[in-house]
Length: 456
Image (cartoon, rainbow, N blue to C red):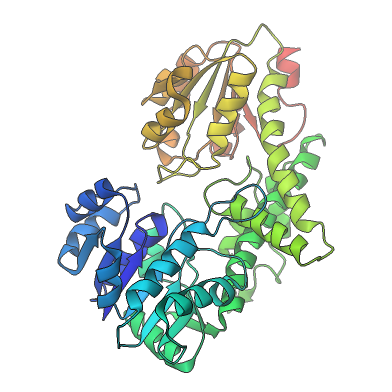
């Protein structure tokens, strides 16, 4: 089977390489000549654990080209995996439309049945009311000759290769039984995966609903955590631990309790970031308002997420009551570990807040420094070593839970933090060490008043 993939970004490249690993012949299409050259040479343009090794393994089955027309003509299936940025009001479908027009134009005059798959995250009805009419008009064909599918991705950055190679479910929103049969062949390399067949609009809604639910869980946790912070002796983690032992949450099967991974989202933190949750929830909220749906839940979860960042930022400032704050350090600018993606990154936003208040800012990350430099330029100082970054800082925020931070000893922290310095543990990364307790650690969602007396 020959498959063409429009776009070599995060979703497109992982999809292309993953399908090539199951024996499919893949042609990746991109407008960026440097990207095309790098991928052709086995160099991944994005940081994702295991991706470059998988690319090198499957190079014989992957071709990368600037020539969309010939790539589409030769393909049985064409996957659209281009960006859908949020423009402040709605998602921008201009790249989707461009890809659909190119596919339609290239399909004109061909004889073989072609399946057009939307992999990009788009609002409901986009596949059938935007992509379908554009492709059919540009190609001059009917749905007897071109089929359509919405196939949402469920990839976690930092775990994308594992998620693609071992999917928990594959959702296929198909326009006909013929398309279903073709798409089952596309994914025949994953015989153990649950395949969910729907119409395209339902598949689009599944993607948005899944992301909104996860985002809601995070914001709910942070709002509960704020309440716990006002109560002496109450730790939000203990509260959530008591909640998730409800059998409706964590059922007991054959005497063993099953703790769902969703329970890990019930934990205080700094809020969600990245390329998906913020954009997708905002897009769903806008779509909901366009449909005149009367609801405030999406507004609320976005409000909590936006204000949580400032809440956590102020935790560091408010506890530093002895002396003037001059310098702030941010450990982690990737929005999550094992990626170099800084889109909507809490660490980036904390650094921006510090700059706006006139503080000197030092930032550190293990793989995202280059992207961070593109964002801030010379306005901040950059460090590869976290201990060097926090040297001389009055407040240090641990914004990304890189596992390498766990290797820093208590003694190293003590040596590199000034006497009156504060370390804000935004994601409970050092919670187990707090039992000592550390004189300099503040944990989000933890009991009120523990450090205030030390600096009064």
